[in-house]
Figure 1 (cartoon, rainbow, N blue to C red):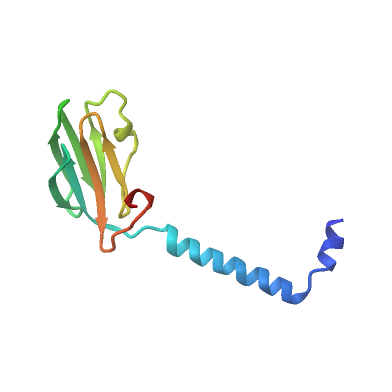
Figure 2: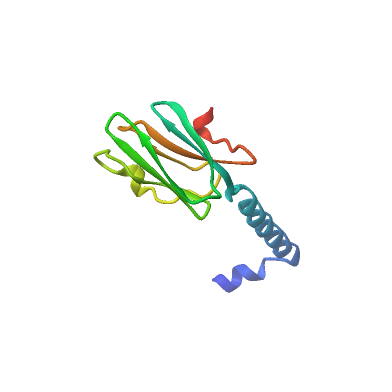
Amino acid sequence: MFSAALQHIKPGDWLTLLLGSIFVALLTLKLWNGDLADKAVIRGGGKIFREVPLSPDQQIEVPGPLGVSIISIHDRKARIASDPSPRQYCVRQGWLQQAGEIALCLPNQVSVELIGSKRKYDSLNY
């Protein structure tokens, strides 16, 4: 049955399938890969606490209503290393490395967002 279906595919059909597959692969690489981040924007209580470059390794303490959150920057990546929030969702998010990625600690009102040379937009910005 499968071989009977292949007999009806002509050389032009194969060419169309090949070109379509290459086009989809190129679009995937272009649109789904984020740019590398240049700096981290750290917010506390809804206001910008600090903007820091990702080049030097460092740890930053950010005060919040529940206590102090610790932001760790290492090898041009950032993460929330510790937070007094009860469920630890932002700590479990792990390392952020591409522009546009963000980690939020809502109970402690602390966030880290990575910014690159090009600003990316998603459905949250509409």
